[in-house]
Length: 242
Ligand code: BV8
Image (cartoon, rainbow, N blue to C red; front, side, top):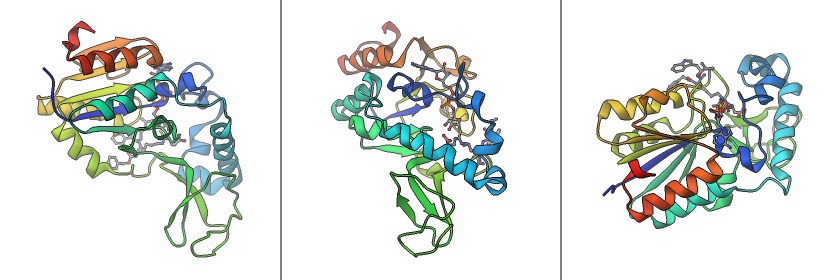
């Protein structure tokens, strides 16, 4: 029977049934914006107003009371509560739906939409409302140097040391709702496989770029698959039978 710590990588697919757009699916975020313009430091340098507006729109969407944790988020929070070893969610998402579902061990490797960072004093700030190019840092008082606390392409993801420590000691690696396009997250499954100890499982709507690297793959909407998978895990079922 499977025992020990679980690491769960999530991507935009886990929030899709909560009404948040994914990036690379039909009509996704990158079909409406060029990521070079809104998710790179160069894009921010070129047109900070466009980038601030891009994140303001996504932050406002998160405020919409129709955007709530879905059964996948809730099942992962239940797994953390009921599993007899640590459960760590490593999310590429910048929404706060895992936390709102009740997950407490969550690492946002690409940052958080409802946070800002002052480039003058370095402080990470709670920022639930709009941010502009003139926003004032409440910590140091400087104007115009607050940016979204988000990891853009070409920037170093957050918490990498903690993430690799968890990957190196996990008894199970789950990947949920990610296309496996963005590194280093897309490389986590290969890293776990190199160790050759923990089973690796992909739960997604369709095969990701890294599908062949998973011991087991299950396809369907996360809101249906994840509760079923968590139920089977907690019952001690053989994972192959899920
Ligand atoms: C870095 C900003 C150096 C926040 C994002 C090799 C090694 C290292 C780096 C690279 C490398 N090759 C290339 C790179 C550079 C680059 C990169 O990966 N480029 C890609 C385009 C090739 N990586 C970087 O620049 C990273 N930094 O490497 O620094 C370093 C490396 C290691 C250690 C130290 C330093 C920084 C990457 C972060 C970029 N920022 N976002 C924001 O605006 O949100 S990434 C962007 O894509 C999104 O934020 C998202 O987080 C991320 C991943 O997308 P997914 O979550 O997978 O979403 P996607 O739409 O693609 O897929 C959704 C999936 O869900 C689909 O498969 C779909 O089928 C499924 N789905 C849909 N609905 C459902 C569903 N599944 C289940 N149920 C449903 N209902």
